[in-house]
Length: 287
Length: 350
Ligand SMILES: Nc1ncnc2c1ncn2[C@@H]1O[C@H](COP(=O)(O)OP(=O)(O)OP(=O)(O)O)[C@@H](O)[C@H]1O
Ligand SMILES: [Mg+2]
Image 1: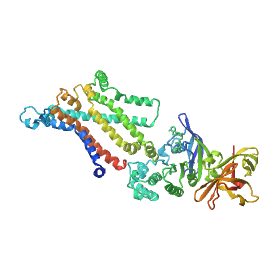
Image 2: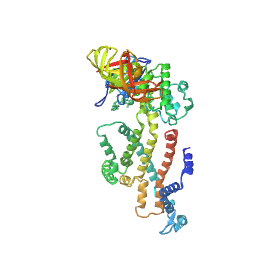
Image 3: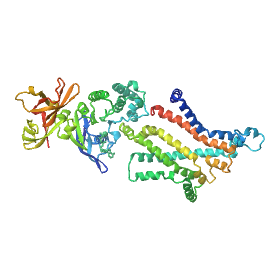
Image 4: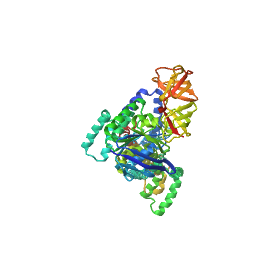
C-alpha cells in the first residue's frame, strides 16, 4: 500500500530536475557494479575497449580449467564454505551483540550514574583505535588462549567493532520509547515478562531490526580482524576475496566473487525492508 | 470504593526533595484535584499513590491499610498518563483490553466488557484503528476506557485535558465528571489550571514546592484562601496589606473599611485584605449610595471589555480591579465610588 502510494507520488509530483537527480543517484550507486558484471563475464578485456574482446562463453569449451562463473560456482573456489562461514558468524555475532546491548542501552538511556559520560566515551573507543592495532593485540592474546583460528576467536573479535554501533542505536531507540508505556502496562496489571513481550520488544522492533541488520552487515564485511584471527583456517567472503585479488589482477573470477560478496547484504536489506514496513510501520507507527 | 490517605509522605530524589511532607485524606468516591505550578510535585504524588515511586518517608494507605509493599500490578489502581501512552502497535480494541488480557480473563468476559466500555466512551466506530489514526480527544477516551475496563478502585489522571483544544476540553470535562459520578470511583486528577480544578473537583489540594498549601472545597479555596500564594494562584487580583484597628475594622491605603472578624486575628495585627473583583459594586459618582458601608472613591484608570463582562481598574490609593456584567460601560477617567460588603472581604494573616 505504501509502495503504491509512493509510486504515484513519484509520477505526479517530481519535476524533471528531481527525476534527473534521482537517476543520477541511482546511477552513482549502481554504476560501479556494471563493469564488475561485464568483467565477470569477460575472458579478455583490454583497455581502452568499451566491451571485452573475448567473452568467457566463447572460451568455455576451449579451456581445460574452469573459467569465470564456472570457477566461482565450482568447489575449487571455496565460495560456499566462505558464504556459510560469513552468514553463521554474522548471525551469531548479531544475536550476542543484541543480548549484550539491549540491557546496556536501557540503562544508558534511562539512568544517570557517576562516570556515565566517561563510559560512553569508552564505548566509542573501538571506533577510534585502528582495526589493525586491535587485531594484532587480540591475536597475541588469542594465540596464548588457544582460540586463534577458531570461530570463537573471530566472533569475539567481531563483537568489538559492532557493540559500539549497536549500543548507540539501541540507546537512541530506548530514549525515544520513554518509560510511560512500560509503566502504563504495569499499572494495567502486566508482569515484567508481559511488559517486555507485549510492549517493550514490539515497540523497539524497528530499532532492533535496524541495529541487527547493521551489525550483521558490519560483521560480514570485516576483513582485517577475520584475516588476522582466522589464520587462514577460517575463511569468510571478504578474506576469500582478498586472497583472490591480492595478486593485483582483477580477473573474471575475482569479479564474480565480488558480486557474490555483495549478495548477503542485498538479500538482508530486502527482507528487513519488508519486515519493518509490514510489522511495525504498517501498523501505524510512521503515518 | 477505596479511601486513600497519605500520611506525612516525603519523597527525595538523591539530595533533591520533591515532596517535603504531604498529608492528604481522600474520601471514598471523591473527586480530588491536585493543583499547583509546574514542578511542585503533583505527578510525583500520583506516582507514589500508584506505586511507581516509593515514598522516602511516610506511608500511603488504601482503606486504612499500608500499601508500601504492594506491587504496582496488585494495587488495582488506574492511571491515565499526561501523554496517554497508548500502545502504538495495538489497535484501539487491543489497547482497551490490554489490562484484561494480561490478567488472563476468559475471552467471553473480555469481549463483553469491551463492548460495554466502548459504548460508554463512544469509540465503537474506531475500534480497529491504531492510535496514530485518532484525534486527541479520541486518544484520551481510549486511555480512559483502557483504565476503566480494569475496574480500578482508585483512578488517577495526570493533566488529562492539557493536550486538548478549548472546545474539546469542555466536552471532556463534562464527560469525566459524569462518568466519575456514575461509577463513583475515587478519583485524583492533576492540573495546573485552577478553573479546571474548581469546575471538576469536589475538593482541591493546592501544592506549592512539595508542600500541601491548602485542601478544601473549590469555593473555600476561592473565597477563603489561607495564604496570599493560594489566593494568587486561584486568580485573586485585589490583595492589599492592611492593619487591623479592631477585630472587624482594617486600615488600608484607601481608607479604613469594615470587615468580618475572623478567629485568630487580633487588633494591631498586620494582615492582608482580599477583595474579590466580582464582589465589589461600582457606581458613577453621582449615583453613589448614601450611608452604605465601605465606600471607596476613585477614578477609572483602565477598562477591559470581554463581551459579557467588563473589568475596570480603579485608582483609589491602590489599584482596585472590579469586574461586572457589561450591562453598561463607564469611561476611563470617570470618577466612581466603590462599595464592598464586609462579608466579601477576606483577611489573611501576615
Ligand atoms: N526521577 C526524578 N529524579 C529527580 N528529580 C525528579 C524526578 N522526578 C521528578 N523530579 C523533580 O521533582 C519535582 C516535582 O516533579 P513533578 O513531576 O512531580 O512535578 P509536577 O508538579 O508534576 O510538574 P508539572 O506540572 O510540570 O508536570 C521537580 O522539580 C522534578 O524535577
Ligand atoms: Mg507532572
